[in-house]
Length: 67
Image 1 (cartoon, rainbow, N blue to C red):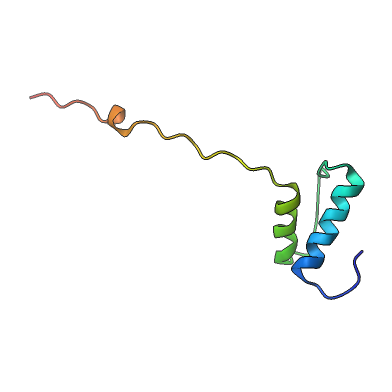
Image 2 (cartoon, one colour):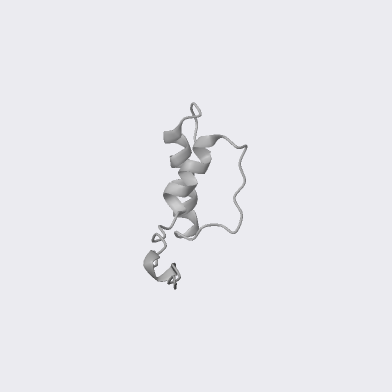
């Protein structure tokens, strides 16, 4: 529990405290009251970046036209 106003900074502090107490492993389930700052803080602290999908060469997908 973090005393004070409901701010993004406090939301990050709460989630950072969860991270500290759990040893950097996200809990299997996290619930909130849908305050938007909570989702942002959870993603910032526990999120893992994923590489963008690789693009296939579009020219390979176009069938060859025959007369």
